[in-house]
Length: 84
Image (cartoon, rainbow, N blue to C red):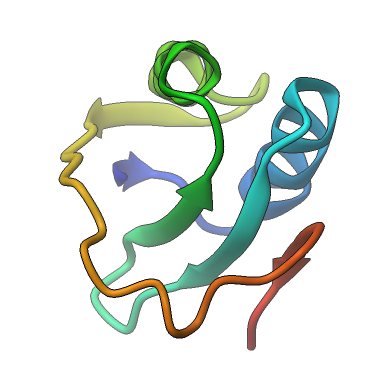
């Protein structure tokens, strides 16, 4: 995600939304001011997450959501975690 997505509670928002959808994965801040989300789950739930992430939390201003399929699942986790 790009836009105003750091310093506005965006990572906590992602963890909450992903938890409500039963998804697993990680979220972290990028050095360029973006936020990176890796999520695993049912396709329909991933689509719902992408829609919610495009809106973001109250003080964010999301300008772009770029998504792609994760082919390497070696880092696959259970639950959703913030990575520093």
